Image (cartoon, rainbow, N blue to C red; front, side):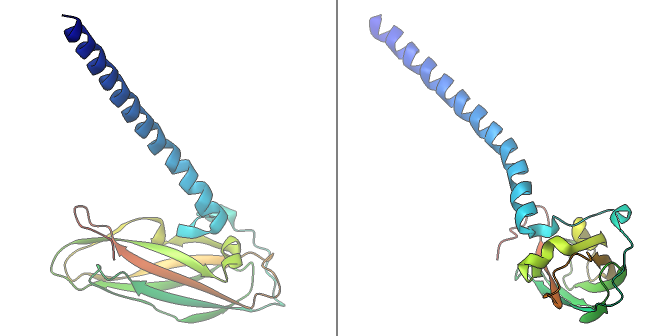
Length: 184
C-alpha cells in the first residue's frame, strides 16, 4: 500500500509539472507577440515602424530635395505568382504623398492567400518611409488565375538624412494559404 501511495504522489507531481509547463508555454506565446512587435519596430521588419493612417501625413514638403525611390518585388518559391511593381522607380520630394501600384497574378488553378513583407534599403531609411495604404498590411486572397493591381501610398519623412538619396522598398510575397507550408 505504501508503494501505491508513492506512485499516486509521483503521478500527481508529474501531472502538476505538465500543467505548469503548459501554462508556461501559453504565457510564453502571449509574450512573443509584443516582443516580436518591438523587434520589428526597432529593425523596420515586416513593414512596422510605418504609419498606417493618412492622418499621420504631415504635409511639410521639401521641394528643394529629390530622392529616388526604387521598388523591387520577389516571390517566395512556394508561391505560384507573377509579381512586379508597375513603376520601378520614382523621384519624390520628402513630405509629399505619392501613389504607385504593384501587379500580382495567381498563376495556379487554385485559390491562394499571400502576404507581402516589406524591407528597406538602406536599413536606416525604414523609419522614414510612411505608408498610408499598402497591400502589405493584410493577407490577400486570389482566386485561380486572378490578377490585380494593388495600390501603395507613401511619403518620405522630411527628416530623412540628407546623405540618403536613394531608398529601396522591396516586397517579398509569401504563400500563407491555410494548410500549406509557406517555407522556402
